[in-house]
Length: 283
Image 1 (cartoon, one colour):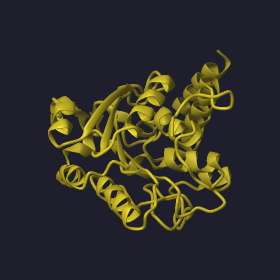
Image 2: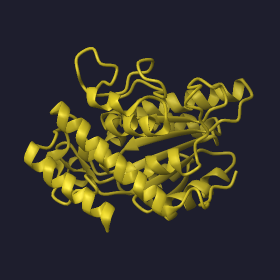
Image 3: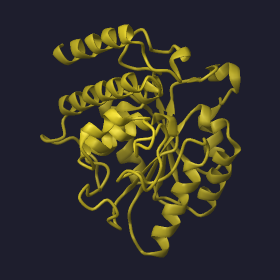
């Protein structure tokens, strides 16, 4: 399948969707008074491209459709983004987003499989999603299903050894239906990745593990579409897209400020962010 922009899947339409997702993330985390808005905002264009750019095959009315493509949010703290995307895709009513992180709510702070339709894996304990994704690929192979599996990784998450165990296994099993996308915003909760646990040379590491590596501007829809199309043509090995992003993208005073990693905005900050995002929509 070739991925390409069409009259119904245009860059302006995807930009509008990205703005709506950012606003929903803002409202949900502000209302909850906790969460990870900046970690969610850095991956908005990636997730919007997958769900609304004609990449993923899915049926909201049949969440367990066997032939569906799988999307696994391995960086589970970005759950607000996953929930917002699923709501916009029609899996459940957007009103559910207002119950983020409430006691006994299915909309928990990290995704829990089985509580909300469309959630493919319980994540949040970092490092596990790529293993789950590989399992889905191997299961599809056994069941003779041709679905693809996309796993969104965090860069801080790549400090976990299980990521590299899964990377080694995926190459060994020639899992060419598996595409990892790395949200490379270069910050984690405690500071810059380069200071906490340097990942570079990152592309070379993945290549040495037997992966096909592509890089993209993680906020540019044309760039994302191009590399997703490129990796779909790869055979005999898994692929990873290193998407260069900005932590907190879309709200200027949050961008690249790691102190916002695990906290919601105050009411005053949220009002400023809301105005900024609305201004982007009008420009």
